Amino acid sequence: MKYLLLLGSLALVTTASFAQNLLGISTSRYGGTNRLYINPSLAADSPSKVYFNIFTANLHANNNYVRYQAPFSLISLISGTVPDRYRSPDGAVNFAVEYTRENLDGKPKNGTISGEVRGPALLMRTGERGAFAITSRLRAVGQVLGASQALLSAVRSGLSDGAIFGLPTTNNQFSANTNTYAELGFTYAGTVWEDDGRKLLLGATVKGLLGYNAQHFINKGLGYRIDVDEDNPNAAYLEVTRLNASLAYTTFLQNRTLTPRTLLSTSIPGLGAGFDFGFTYISQYDADSPALQLGIAMTDIGGLTYKGPEYDFTNIEQNQAPVRFVSSDFNNVGGSVGIARVIQEKLSAGRTPDRNRFQAGLPTSLNLTLDYQLPDGLGLNVTYLQDVRAQEATAVHQPTLFAVTPRYDTRWVSIAVPVAYLNRGLTAGASLRVGPAWLGTDNFLGLIGNTSNGIQPRGLDIYAGFAFGLGRANSYDE
Image (cartoon, rainbow, N blue to C red; front, side, top):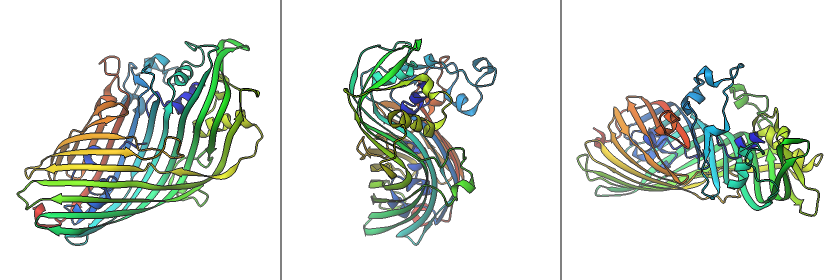
């Protein structure tokens, strides 16, 4: 059952998101195509005639359930450099439950873990008033929203240590979604109004989507109790007494890796489309004047349709035979597909799916930005991203975020220090760009925190890339 925790609370290293917004580079005027994911109209504000993004990679995790307090950092765990004294003879890391500390504030818990690769991309100005861009991206996310503290605590303890036996719990609601997909985007932006140093930009992106993997478990009502397992007095079971939920999954990536051949396979299970649009107001009298920008955008509208079974569970009631889960049910089960199959078989063994296709929505968000840039390179950006998906939606979510990013930004060097409020906690990061190469994090303490230095992070974030611009779009960029 502890493997269900890794999906459900993502407690060890988490988590879509998609809060991974690369604030150190996406708020820079020299961010090129990386700015378009927050507001596509900014393509028409590119200071370069041509901008190439060679690659951008990002790993992100956040949660509000546990704090990390292992004797080794999260970055060493991810990079495989954990010291041998914390490993078993077969080389696996011995990750103890006490390496995480619960946040027992009684509030629902959220978590996201995600990775993203922004592939080759091109942005080209079409004069001083317009621009177009072609972008590509691969995204993978696992996410839980609204999970109850009591349920996660029981699962975290392995249904034994500290579990409250015999106490029924009702009205638990949460959603769990995963999605792995690629997108190819086409952006056009232009100036729709201009007068005496002020202008209004409008931009839109249309995206074609290829889906490789998705699962969801949308729980609208769960009743359960935990008690001692008669067959194993040292363990416990979780008994589901009431359930109103839907479960769906794909199996395409089971026993497959994301190779170029897999990405271009004709048998991929998901297809879809997405759309972004935005406006940006700019006030700058001349090159020696400060620049003020105000932006509003709606991004990631749309979703994918996947081929895969979907089940509705509405017939498990108090007066019917309850369903029991024990820890051994999840032994030797790997990945979200295996977990979904175990849950489905326990709840409805031999049952045919209610549907053979299901929807997986994109992390739609409303994005508001304010940016102030001085001629000497000093600037300040304020970004607010608001999740607009309902909790019970079959979709990954953009966690609501508020960030302030002071920066020094020139054509050859950029330094930024983003500070964000995310998942009921503060994070602080730093990024550096020198020429075409940049490296950054939106959560620096999350990378280095461990019991030795007393830092107890709730996630991590790291990103890097190689991109460059050619030519100057107008006289303001001399």
